[in-house]
Image 1 (cartoon, rainbow, N blue to C red):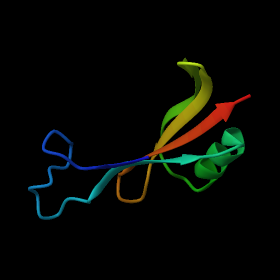
Image 2 (cartoon, rainbow, N blue to C red):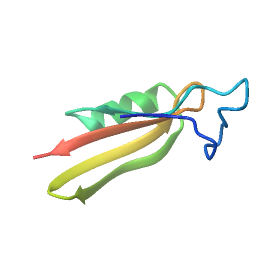
Image 3 (spheres, rainbow, N blue to C red):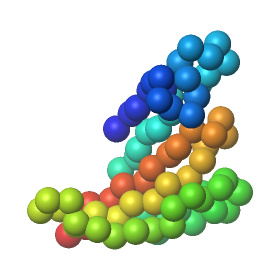
Image 4 (spheres, rainbow, N blue to C red):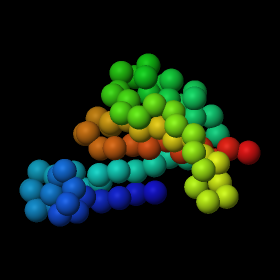
Length: 79
């Protein structure tokens, strides 16, 4: 999953210094471990682990800010 900056994004694409990527997601099979590695790296976690249903899928997600303040999502489909 990858989203680029748009006119409604915090970083407008009209700004010459904007980063082209606003948000992207990584799927993982061990989200708790992945988030712990993020924490150990000292990155800002903006949403701790959250489990929810999307349609017929039960998922767990978490969000953190990357080195350029981009939003990075961790995504796990639960059995």
